[in-house]
Image (cartoon, rainbow, N blue to C red; front, side):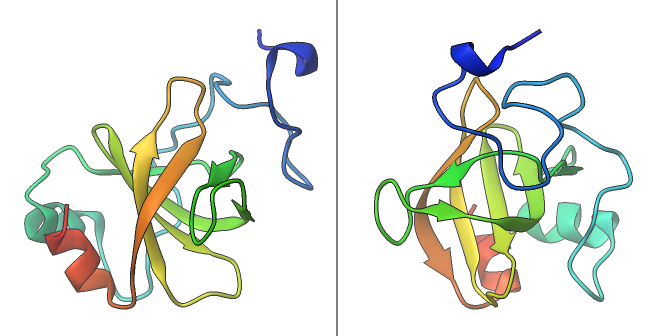
Length: 117
């Protein structure tokens, strides 16, 4: 089990684990309003797309080192789309080995973000 001393970032407020914990993936995670997992898979072209647990560190956009508080996290193999709390944009990034996400791009439209994968 990962301990606080082993992880480079503190957990998000209200988080019950550190990055890389065993329950980061969830089958019934939150999806964007009006979308099903099958629709997301069809548009993205990733038949294994899934919703991920939001208890993770998300950094890198708009400024390196700035943290986002994720409301929705979708995984597409090694890539992710993140919708932050109180933000309408979608952030694209890489899923790191420790469970954190490093973002490098943003989209104002979810459909376009899916097509950008």
